[in-house]
Length: 307
Ligand code: SIN
Image (cartoon, protein in one colour):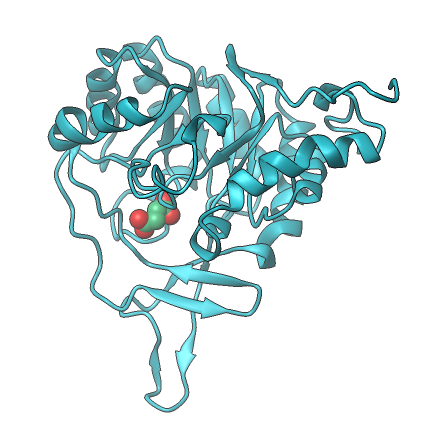
């Protein structure tokens, strides 16, 4: 790489052109509005919105957040305003303040509901892609159980693809024995990409009360604690499928982004980091070209899946 050349952080992701590979992960950025006054949202590679379900949901009882060493746990339970409100209010409001690619995360409780939600987004031109959440550990029906069964994972992928012309990313749970089996099933169902991973089913106990810290007994662990496991799984899937991967799991720094790309990711999402530092994505986007320059990387394509 020439001395003065600025490294190219742009990536092509299933037909979407992103100015950089960094996007906030679903559920840690709402519909963008809480962040719009903090920084210029257009700096983001893409925005992934909070899971939308058919009906509005309050989510699980409180408390539903617990701090952990090197991470956090949540048991939110897919709180969201429902598809009608989201399409009428939240997505148009996001479009007002953000010009880049919007990836809408959808979550259903049956195959038919996933298809119905995907069909509703089909009419929203400014939504660039769908992320299909078959991995939420915090609901008692559906959720991660869809993503733990290759037959169901394929069926949901096919149902969404049948009604959608947008790129479809299937969001996978790590709470399985072999994540490549699920990724391959999604690929066979027509998925355009894989988002991975959602959080790990976990538990914390308050030793004074002898009760779990979250009102729900189990909750999802995310943050730096899971990053090496996420990278191992991304690497396994990278070597198993031909479709692109959005790597997710504990990313906080430019080096973390580069590691995830070296493991095989095309783009990445940052989740818990936004809750600890709302400027986290912006800082990483700023640092990334400098760190690439220091390491002699001119283009992210040249390091993808090097291991
Ligand atoms: C939640 O709302 O429970 C978190 C979303 C998820 O883990 O998919």
